[in-house]
Amino acid sequence: GVPKISQKVGEEAIETVVAANVEGPERLASEAADLLFHLLVLLEARGVPLDAVWKELTRRSR
Image (cartoon, rainbow, N blue to C red; front, side, top):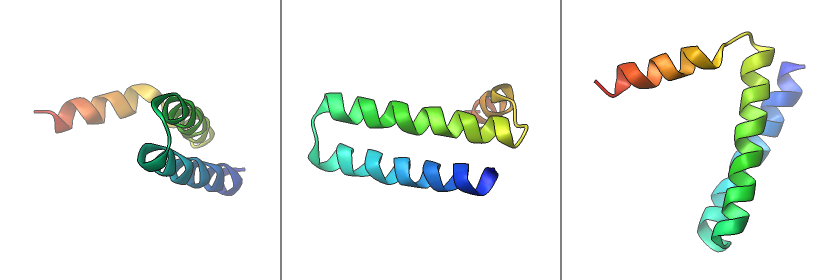
């Protein structure tokens, strides 16, 4: 469910930050892919379409 997916997103975020600070670019790309994947799973589980995220990013860039 959502709590478990959320926990996984948090774990992947931490792994991405660690990779950004102490690993090479290939490892960072791998961890970023994991983070994005689990974030997409979370959005789907909560019924938030990716389009809503893009719209919010567009709004912020104005």
